[in-house]
Length: 540
Image: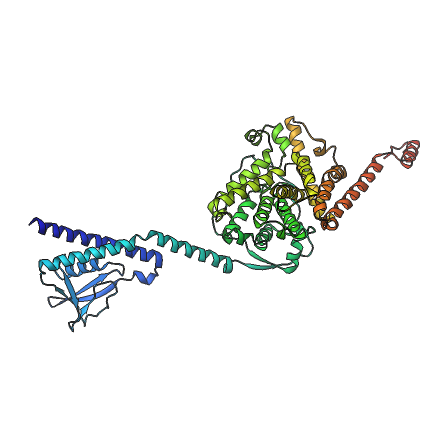
């Protein structure tokens, strides 16, 4: 008696488990395969129940067990009775959601099966249990399902990248976007604002003329809107094989670039256009100096990424102001390169987001090296360290060894410094608007320093500085010595990069002489003033 009860309990439990697992399998099938509106239309069959027609409706997603219970209820047969379904010719019909539909003129009939022998029941229980085990193994193959979903997502992203974006041919001829040299005071603290959606900026196809120009320091950075600059940066990463080297998802690269752009403030000088300017100069120097054959792709990736990130979230006020005003950044970084440390922190805050992490497929040890390299380069852009960095490079340049990691590290720090302050390398019509932007940012800072009672640097005071006085000393004592030192290792830069600096120095010295001549009273001006005084008129 106890044995029979146990068997009945095992049979009932097995049926319950089977029903549960079949439902799980149905749900998985709906998720992975999808369903159209037609899939939700109910199925209809017609039964002969004691000589009367009975219409039965069920969902296509019902399990066979559910359908059997429904047929039993419709035919006034006990719920757990074993049944079979036959057509008018006596042929058996499978009881499942895909069974053939019939019509009122061709009725199916539910036939209860005869009572089985104990041995048959044991076989039935064993069969049901084996089916339950099989359904469990299918229902819980989570790892395989996740892999399949990931692969499908990757295919979708590639399709968006290849087909879903606008293709525009870029050829720029003349004209310049106006320099936005106005800015408002903003709080020092800002949150990273990454893009989590599929990037929406158009995919631009660069013309060959643009591609060639992009590799030269003479590139006119004023010709481009933000979306176009983003596409140019994206092209640089592809052209240098960085996307392939670091196994970057193209969609992730787009999201990262958008997050970078959105975390540059609208300062007169330290803005996203400056970021693009520095990055393009880095890309141009890599090609001009043929560094693809001399440096590893990891080092090229460090150089480009540091250039892109080097001024992230710059507030428009330099380290001197941060320290004198005791800002949150100065306190946080103990007055040691507060801005550069902040740029690094924002850069890796963006990279910490999976949807923006272009190095997400790099192994941890390699990423550690990349991270350290980027930090080192961004910190090197602090002009307070200029003399130290240049002197270190001078000691190595005469016996430079590209297989020596210390030598290569020194080269990279000098390269990012060159790119960061390289505006005067460009043609005068490209370089001069940057001076206006820089002076406007300086004047904003000096005005604020005066209003807060802080020390004001003479070269930033709008009452004391002019373009020539601002540029001559910087070009003569900072730019030319650094680029001439770099030229010892790469002589090919002299004509295209060093000579423009010398020409710019001469140009500003001529302007300075004109300024001095106007401010000083020449003999002619003295005589003219006396003549005016004799007539009783006030001299101009």
